[in-house]
Amino acid sequence: MNVLSIVVPTYNENQTVRLLIDQLEEALRGFSYEVIFVDDSSDNTPEVLAQLCADHPRVRCIHREGQRGLATAVLEGFRLARGSVLAVMDADLQHPPEVLTRMYREIGQGADVVIASRHLPGGDDGGLHGIRKVISRTARMIGKAALHRVRSVSDPMSGFFMIRRQVIEGVHLNPVGWKILMEIVVKGRYSHLVEIPYAFRPRAANESKMSPAEMINYLRHVARLVVQSPDDRRFWLFALVGISGVAVNTLLFALLTRWRIFPETAAFVSGSLAMIWNFAWNCGLTWRDAPQSDPLAVTFAKYAAVALIGIAVNLVVLSVLFRLLDVPKEWANLTGIIGGALVNYRLNDRWTWRRVGHKRPRMRVS
Image (tube, rainbow, N blue to C red; front, side, top):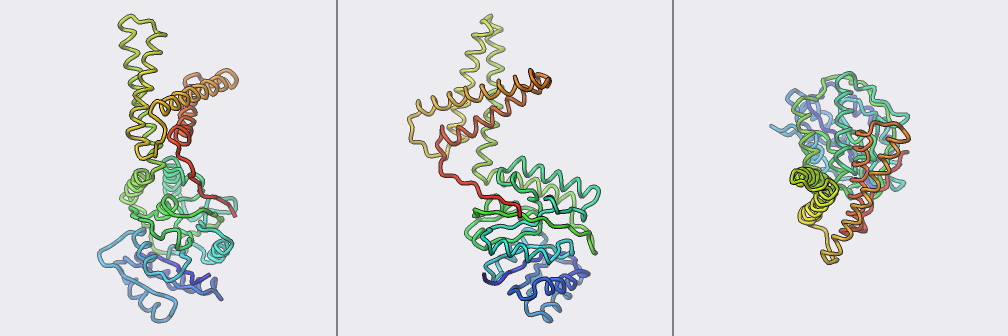
């Protein structure tokens, strides 16, 4: 492999950058590497970094005036990097430099993305305490719920990772805030992702950059990724269409029974019309960009067949939870509806609208 480029964003890290370089030199002895500091500081960190650059030929620094943002700093570092392998770590000594050698070895064995995780067996998030731990856990849950590529990753919030340059070449990255890894996991071009455990160290000096503004930026970032990721956007559009179908079904059923139509007949008519409503919106909105070779009638027949399968899944889950496990019927039914909806989406995505050939990246824990 070629040069390893280590990108380190800094903001008022004057007390730790020298120690970080000393630790990197010890951990990466015998490696061909460079360190790129991208600095947005308002203290004397630029002067400290300038002296480091003068003392260490492997160290390069860029200071950005009037800018602040970890994710954009990382992208600037990627742009300046000379290596074919890119790593990102913090300057506050919470990321142990010796872990880089394991990550680099995984890249040499075929990994495209290597994430240092605090949440695997053998890992530790001991550097987080109190409210920061709660915030980190909540943010992780939100990301996993919203983005399907993130669900298999134990630590999508990690700021400590390594990638092959090809993963981001030609990929438009426009993150908001501080979580650049999530952007790469969702948009990157990779087939093999590996996670390795590590112990997150307590902060050695300076203060956390976490703020309410960064939390809002994170939520904006997740929402933007949902919109920009076709798979995630399609799923949430399907869910919204489904919710609108429930509203249509309920309203029609109420009207028909008010007109003294038998409940069974009203349920059949309202359910059928709601299915046609859902089909029309899914054709025109959810899968509008999917290539469609079947006639519309065939597509509708497939959609109807999938709807029946979803109903069957709903009934089975409801019966098992309510009859066998004594779960309250309301919760059992809700669980069945969710299960049926997930099956509906997957079958429609892979069969009704024929999205074939989509391969999910291989995930592995080392």
